[in-house]
Length: 150
Image (tube, rainbow, N blue to C red; front, side, top):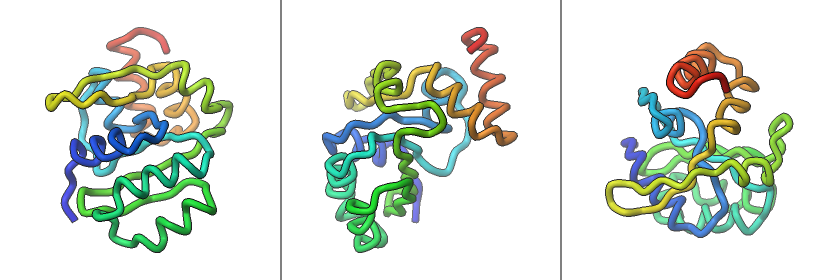
């Protein structure tokens, strides 16, 4: 499996699902590029959003049957594709409801003209504090150096 984050993000953006890019890709889009090996998104806990994402990746999924079961079951999911790994988190992580994530969204336009939804700094900082791994603390420190206290 190769890793093509641009193609993976474009597939999610084209899906029609409500989403926000989080994790290392979002950190990079907010000014601190770093190596990452997956694309992380957060979505509302809605069957339709899960279905749209799976449908958009259907030809690329390593295990379509697992992905189809996830549509009904919900929860967090790691989708392995020919473009790389997409980690999908559902809302209500800590204090983060979809409404709070959505109100903090930032739109970015990629080099190929695709508009993507990126978590805002408030959401990204909250997620980094919740995860509290060394990489998350480093990301948060770097973002605060760029943007001030978050």
